[in-house]
Length: 304
Ligand SMILES: NC(=O)c1ccc[n+]([C@@H]2O[C@H](COP(=O)([O-])OP(=O)(O)OC[C@H]3O[C@@H](n4cnc5c(N)ncnc54)[C@H](OP(=O)(O)O)[C@@H]3O)[C@@H](O)[C@H]2O)c1
Image 1 (cartoon, rainbow, N blue to C red):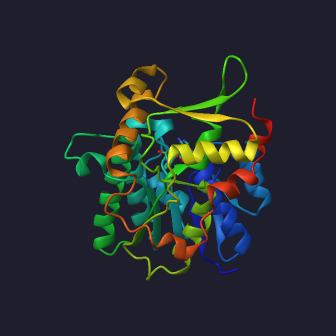
Image 2: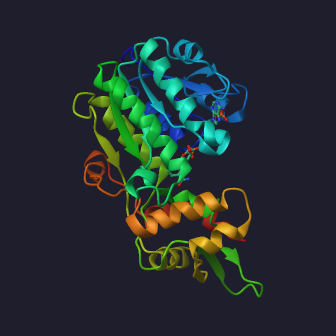
C-alpha cells in the first residue's frame, strides 16, 4: 500500500461507498471517509475495512474545515448530495474545491451531471444537474491555474432506482406490476450500476496525467420496454410500463416530483450525456449489464 491518502465524500452512500469498496480491495491507497456520523452502522462498516473516519457536516463546514479534513490527502472523490442540501449544493461543493486547494490535494475526482440549463439555453433547468455543473466549472478554473488535476465522472440513472424511487408496484388485483415514469418509451434511458463508479474512479486515480481534465460518463442504455421485460424475465412476474408525460408527473405532489419531471424532459430530448464521450468508461471496466444486476439482486426475489 502506498502512503497516498484518498478522501471520499459520501463514503457511507451509494457512489462514495462504491469507491471505498473498490479501493479497499485493491489496497493501493489509504482511505479516509467524511461522514456526519462516525458511529452509524455504515461508518462502522467502513472502519472495519480500515478506513479513517472524519466527522464533518458539509452543510455547516467552512473552507478551513474542509481543508483540515483533507490534510495530507493526495486525492479525493466528491459526490455532493442534492437531496440533503438542495439549493446550497453548489456553494458547498465550491467550499470543498477551495478546501482542496488549501490542503494541496493533487487529484480531484468529481461526480457531476450534464449542464441542462446551458445545453437547453434555459428551456429545461434541472437544479440537481446544473448545480453540479456549477461546481465543475469552478473546479475547472482552479485546475486551469494548476491547483490540482481535475477528472470528472458523469453517473447515469442508477439501476438501483428501481428499488427505491421507481419500484414495480402491484396492481389492485395482484396479477401484474407497473413501473410508472416520465421516460418516453422509445427513447433509450441512460442507465447503469452505481457500483461501477468504484472501478471507474479507481482507474482514474491510478493514472492522474491520462485523465487530467477528462470527463467520463458511463451508460448501458435501454428502452423502458426492454427494462420491464428484463425485470419480468428475472422475476417471473408480469411488469408493465406506464408512461406519464413529465408535465403530469410534475404534479404528482411528492417532494422532488417536479425536479424528476424536469430531468426526464431533458433525458427525453437529449439523453443524459449529450456531446460527451461514452466510449472511455467501458475501456476502464466491464460495465455491469442490467441482466447481471438483476440476477445478483435479492430485492427482486422478494417483490411484494
Ligand atoms: N439516483 C441516481 O440515479 C443518480 C444518478 C446520478 C447522480 N446522482 C446524484 O447522486 C447524489 C447522491 O449520491 P448517492 O446516491 O451516493 O447518495 P446516498 O447513497 O443517498 O448517500 C448520501 C451520502 O452523502 C453524505 N452526506 C449527505 N449529507 C451530508 C452532509 N451534510 N455532510 C456530510 N456528508 C453528507 C452521507 O453521509 P453520512 O450520512 O454518513 O453523513 C452519504 O454518504 C445526488 O446529488 C444525486 O443528484 C444520483
